[in-house]
Length: 223
Image (cartoon, rainbow, N blue to C red; front, side, top):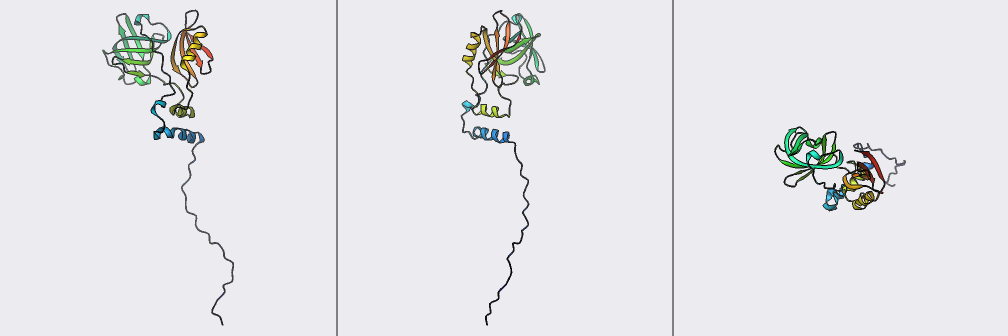
């Protein structure tokens, strides 16, 4: 007689309690793509020389006497800070005074000090000099207002930051504006796919131009 016992039956799988898992947070595709592009910059894989690819420099403008300020999309004046009122200050020289508006960067009144000499470059309109660039006596330049270029946080902005965005040929675009009959051409800023330009038309009047990276020129307004 055998001592072996045969157990007759069909094996069944005993279910195990599923381990609880934390919910998975799905990020928007754009966020993932922007992160993937921006990561090399954070890790130092891309040189710092590429980090500011997106914003061409504005054209330096020689300052005029305050009494000579006229409505313009790109003009500059140099003088002494006489008074400060929050994000505005009074600039004066031997010929007169002008009220300078510095935007959000100037809130708190700490951009300039009373009595110091500064050069202000920007747009003069309705009696205000809306500052875009402020240069202190030691040569330190402060960019005011929107920096221009792509809106922060977008895919195009991330590309600009790592040197993969559009790199407009500013000299060629400036030459195309001159070829179209404009003179005294000054680059005053940049949009997502265009340059903001101040220039004089054939009639001598000041114009604000929208110059696309593809060379298309549009007059936005006349002063």
